[in-house]
Amino acid sequence: MTGSFRWEVMAGVARERVVAIVRTGEAAAARQRCETLFAAGARVLEVSLTTPGALDVVAELAAAAPDAVIGVGTVLDDTSARLAALAGAAFVVTPTLDPRVIATAHRYGLCAIPGVASPSEAVAALDAGADAVKLFPAVALGVAGLAAIREALPQVPFVPTGGVRIEDADEWLAAGAVALGMGGALSRLAADNATQAAEFLRRLRLQS
Image (cartoon, rainbow, N blue to C red; front, side, top):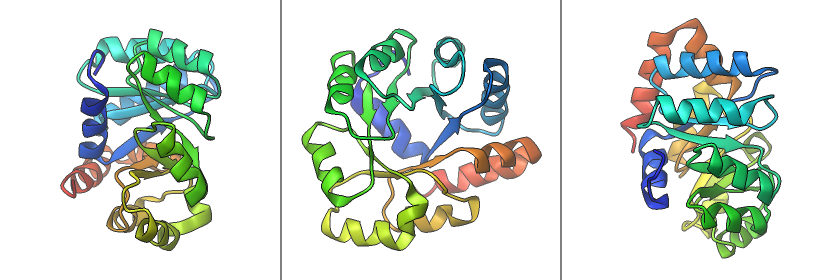
């Protein structure tokens, strides 16, 4: 979705309900994993900067799949956010809350999804202009934790990430998650059984 407005990008994320996270030890493996996820029906992909050559992979994906929503993860500074924009990313995701990353992403038209671990950080993220908030690590708070936070902060668009399992996905969405960040669990399912992965993604999409 290169060239789309931020609200269009976030609408795409909310519609798909899953951000498929790709984190590998080499660029070739990342490309293969992205192809596997695409084949299973994933349309929102996040390539982590911990992957060597991640920005090259993002640039290739953005050019080859203009209808997909491609982002960059593990963005730790404003320079990386600018490089993500140059690579053709539509959004950036961070493990922490850094207003400079949000500001740089917005300056170049990218959505910013910072990581938070508490209600205070969630509100600070909104104050800084976050388009959505990555609840990280989600496994530490659990579904009940998300539900409790949303009772006080129903206006926060949470994307739980970190330990979200296939079997728990429906519960996270029922607790109020806008979308789910899923890495290894979804990648393994897509590699082992593309049909089952496609059905899983279709079912979650229907909950939009």
